[in-house]
Image (cartoon, rainbow, N blue to C red; front, side, top):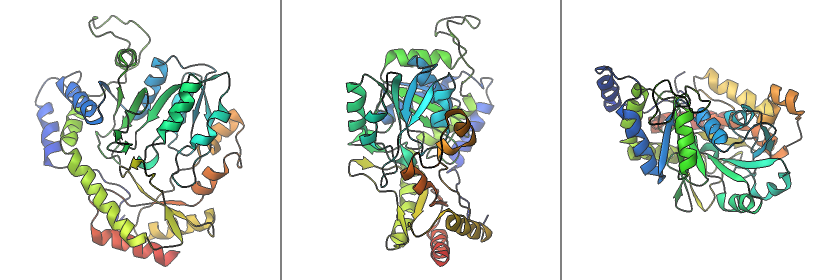
Length: 369
């Protein structure tokens, strides 16, 4: 591809940080993990942070720390990466979907209460594409119905809702560090919370169920090997020390797109709620209702043929084959989500894109509409 869909923002500082760890004997359970946890927790204003091997693992541990398991229901969005629902199923829970707001593309707070049943234990709100969900009305439902509130902030590092950082808006939140995210560790994630019990349980479960002061072969509870390596953490520390520059680079590239596509009536973009500060994760455009899924696929194929990499963010989770098989979901269940998913195109986006590359993408897109 001449213009890639994503690219990590890596400098010599990251390479030096990784090489420095490679000169030591401690490639796991070293000081860089604690340093990353301190930097990330401080950045989002959370008292505790637990580094793990993926954002998916982080969400899984949060749910287990809240004792959410077999036959428990968790309300969430069908418009997300599949991990935000799969993590509910890992221990026998059931994701219960609620349709989305057609403009912000996040879960529609006004539809949540109708989905609550006697089996509902939590709401898992996703900050889709770097925009925080509308957490105040969601929290009101959670408090009124005595539900736990989890924030999937895997795409939203650096975002804010009413001045509060994403990740800190629920009882616990999780970030992901895949290479297309704002900050990357290659593979990795982190849990943030102010709840000491959640913190202690997650820290133990990520490390085979060990407690902090116990011996290597002493396991207090069922756990997993969800640890982040010292090499990975060193990369994350170097990235977090550049976080403001990284976010500024992504805002600049987003500005290039907004300037060039703002007057294009045949597409629209995710509306940023007035209470939110978005952290640019991807650049997704929605084709107008005059277009269908076949038109979207034609445009994507043509862009890809020109060397401009694109993707369809997201396929509705409820229409994934094993969700259809297990829960009986079908097309028409969540029409707002489905109409959006049929028409979205993720364009190349990362902090290293040049203005000339964005020009090329936008001219090519317009010519195909």
